[in-house]
Image (tube, rainbow, N blue to C red; front, side):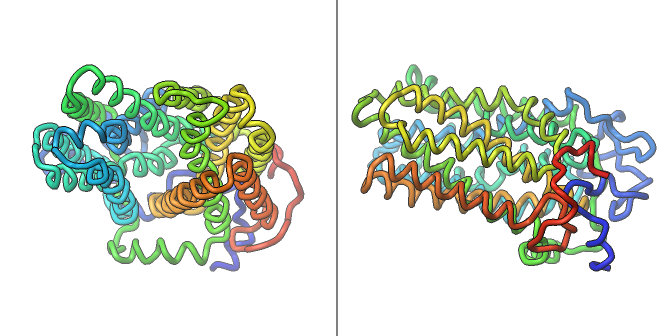
Length: 459
């Protein structure tokens, strides 16, 4: 019963990634040997409950690389809008719809496709998605019609949600003591994809036609497909007997019945808004006084994001040693310090800009990994749905940060905009303290079990 489970389940001691006795897993102990009924699964990747796949560094890196080059599909278009306008013979305003359509497609994919990870086998789902987006990218490279390009971009956005299916799968496969490390590598791969797509597209299009960017993307997507075929382990379908619409309904239900998930949403939205606000308004900051930097120089500040990617293994190992709540606390306090520095002097010295870039990347990633680790531990059979809800809240934060942050910066300047980030982050600290690190699962507000923040000391 809920009352009984609430007395034993806490945010730091949550279920192991594999359901005991294969409860809720379809097909165990019998295993699938074929994908789609005809494509053989390599023997070493077939599911065996007695000898489960070893989730080591090679497999974790595979998940990270796949996330990198799949999520890159969402961002190739952003530096190419001028070339699109020239190639299709339209205005800049018309081609500006392309990034919006890609992101809209991605949001729809998160809402309607990623929950399938709790319903079907994920290996064939991921392979199918990769085949579809790789094939659709061929159309992007050859079409001469803007409407066709926009429709294909929208569909590719829908299909590029594989990283959000890989994330819960990594949580299923990784041992509990390495769950945060595994998630941090997948997340860093995703962040690296955002960075590399913009840099690659901008550099390639500078010297050759923009179509070459998509020809390269086609080759990369099929390379990822081959990598997934030979490296992605099979895992039984979960939640036998549950319908697709039942899965969608349960997502909505989680948002009103799971206190930890609601707490995560209320932290993720403003924190994501801060992150987006910073990177969107950074162009205005560096392009105006006192810096007056060129577009090329401003673009180079994006490379600072490499620091956050490089720190991923250390971030993951640190979180694995802590109760997730405490890692979130450390990240929020560090973000408060970062935004205090921003408010004080980001418009006065470029060194402060670099400090804020690095601090925001590292501590926002720390916060996201710790929150995701805690949420995915709530229910091993609902991880895809739980992750989808978290990512949707992140999207809401991005929209809020872009709209509100841009308005505050353009109308009031950099210091009020920095103070907005500081205020949003202070709000996340309040939300975190409303529910302590050792509260029972279904306790909404309270503080129980002391203040111990180290996982090794928690009984």
